Amino acid sequence: MEIKIIKTTAPKAKPADETKLGFGKVFSDHMFIMEYDTGMGWHDARVVPYGDITLSPAAMVLHYGQEIFEGLKAYRTPNGDIQFFRPEENFKRLNSSAERLVIPQIPVEDALQALHTLVEVDKDWVPHTDGASLYIRPFIFAADPFLGVRPGDKYYFIIICSPSGAYYASGLNPVDIYVETKYVRAVKGGMGYTKTGGNYAASLAGQDEAHKQNYSQVLWLDGIERKYIEEVGAMNIFFIIDGEVVTPELQGSILPGITRKSVLELCRKWGMKVSERRISADEVAEAYKAGKLQEVFGSGTAAVISPVGHLKYGDLVMEINGNKIGEISQKLYDTMTGMQYGKLPDEMGWIVPLKK
Ligand SMILES: *Cc1c(COP(=O)(O)O)cnc(C)c1O
Image (cartoon, rainbow, N blue to C red):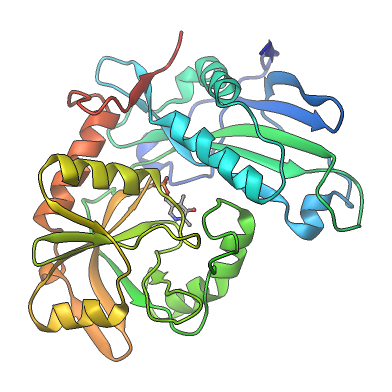
């Protein structure tokens, strides 16, 4: 694929204090754009200065939500090199989301080329501070000016980059979550396994309610029986019960996280008992009461591993591992972040260096 590069003539100042970056607020100097038109396919791949885009107010995405996205990071190693963590997995998943939302797919090789080309142009935007990274957001949306309901004929694939601070500025603090019993996020047969804005829109009311009650997130149950645990909405969920690592199986309503997959692969490599299966909130509560619930943690690109300190289910508030990060959670976090930041050898073949 040929990518045209038009560099900015007005580069922005890099953030002075990388410890104050937060998440998703600052954007790098450039973005990648490619367009799709029915009959032409994907065309006009280019890296251009970061800036606003113009859209018709009738653009289909604004009305019917035909949109998908990905999230990954570029990490800086101690010797200054830049690398990615399993980026091909993100673009395979983008295509799986595309298929479900009737969006034209992009060859993984082309998407990877776009990623490498953009990050090479903006490489000085990859933070140097420990734990900080360049968050990368690829997305595709339908842009035809048309109010009828049908798949689009015109799409944009854009990648933007946002230098972001360490997720855990003050150590791995456990989060408090509760089991959501009023709302559901996704159902089997729907779009739960895709990264699409609509799933997040569906989650906002529950999220809002959780914040009002001083919980950071909700744990979603299946939409049919309202019994089985699904995920946390931007993270997959793991339980360690009596030495067994348990996570809900992928059955269509859960997002197949790349961190989830990596956790499973590491735990299997370490010889642990690992199960992907249905697990009900009642089973978790029973394990807790029997003193067998050892660790609970979320997994996702942003936090990598997020220990759960308190888990509320109805009137029962479970304090997990004395509200402290567990041994396995810590080992997973150290191993994965060690590889991502180039401080541990990549024994799994997960690291992809930036092509120069
Ligand atoms: C992105 C996402 C995750 C985590 O996936 P990773 O690939 O590990 O970052 C989990 N759940 C939902 C709903 C997500 O959108």
